[in-house]
Amino acid sequence: MTVKRIILAVTGASGQPYALALARALALAEGVELHLILSDAAKKVMALEADFTPADLEALAAASYGEKDIAAPPASGSWRHAGMVVCPCSMASLAAIAQGLGNNLIHRAADVTLKEGRKLILVTRETPLNLVHIKNMLAAKEAGADIVPASPGFYHKPKTIDDLVNHLAGRVLDQLDLEHALFRRWGE
Image: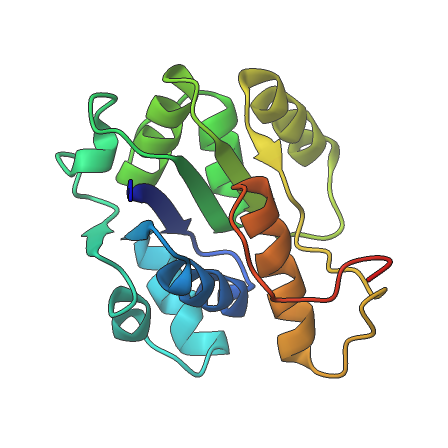
């Protein structure tokens, strides 16, 4: 079986439980090798809003990198992978990615992902949006990224916050064309 490397980058936006649900699902997905990039801001926000630690996320990954590790494999286009997800994606990271700035490993890996024509999914987490945010989303989309706002659906009749979080994680897995059973699909 061919192993699919997937990069999960976690920024300092609110919504750290989304990152954990996605990391768990990717770690369990058959044939997936998870590579994790954690920003310093993500670690700070995690301490404020989550009941898990960076070590909990790192334990789910085949490899983990810090945002300053600009020589890490995901910084190079010659390192092949099947897609990258930035979850949650802060508006600052969205702006850097949309404008092609490579000032840390997350932004550089996203830039490389786009230039190599690979799948890049940005799970934005902000409300309300200002015009700059919207223009950055448009620029990222025009560059080839997929924007998947952290806005779960309700047709699967969620009973818990975990149901809502898992729904979003499942929608991201759908974008990566990975099988899962994280939620009940429309009409099923």
